Image 1 (cartoon, rainbow, N blue to C red):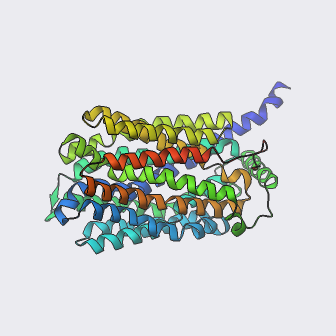
Image 2: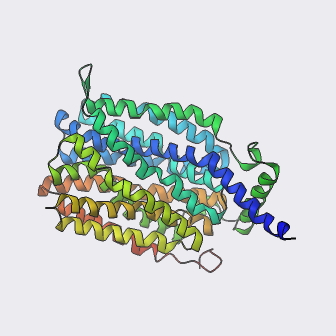
Image 3: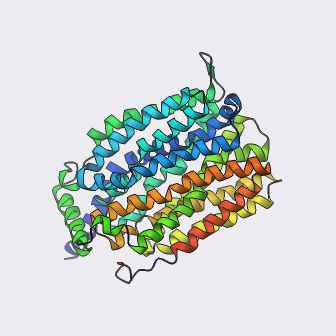
Length: 431
């Protein structure tokens, strides 16, 4: 009798553990590569702006224009992942962006920089919605926060990896090309390789997973079917885009990512300004905030799933991050205190994802949630244009980062306050 009573829990734990072992390391690797290709231009900018004569405003605009291209295909990308194939869509994205990411290392002019960054954003569009849709095909709602925190750990992990890689590449000068060019050329290659591997390694859905035992496969399919049956199925994807909660989540992410991408793109230059160190040392120091963010992000995802709470786990980290950025302004004369404040801010930015991204699936059906995730991520990533550009503009105007950091701090706090206004009934569907 005790054995039979404990078997469902044992089966659930065993299945989730096997899914984690099989899928999660690879999904984390994909997101590390995605984010590294997205922001490595921040490290390259330590040399590129001087060599090509780009102003801070030009660099900020070029860094941010990535997101103009990115948002154009975000909603169709999310829908394609749900109704066609998340696995094949991710593979296509990886192959296209790998080529364009490497090509960025060959630019010579401002317009080449702008166009390649724009097309790189267009190529990567739909990748995050596809990953989130893929996770919804493999994880129950009760496990989804941890799963999202785990694969999004690829964001700080990419920065931890990107700093030392940049420190190495920025020292080289091969075949007459500067180190920043080699940095961009080489970092597009993993995406090309993984684009092919993804087609063969990832399994589309649990029903097709031969690496799961039959009882594990049946249990997981049954759990996901029950979740699907419990959610509204009548809402059309396009009608869901006008849902007030979807629009509110979009605004929340916009302000949040304005701060996040403003800091992530400009982190190396902010550290350079604060410290006056050389580019290799700056690259290493700029990775420190993400080293701090990684365990905090994972712990937040675990706690959000354990408690079942989402809004406060999304809101509090954003507000703490805003306060840390504001503190960074007054501590600018002390480089290590400023780095500590930037570390708290980075931990806040990335910890909020574990609470935020499970929310659309709490009140929408699968196709509607996929379209809504595309809209939320699309509108939110406009902040990826606004944040980097505003920093470049204000820095050229004021000669320092104080005004920029204050703007980003206000955006982060606003994001935290907005998420608290999203209301849900006790059953999770939204009031």
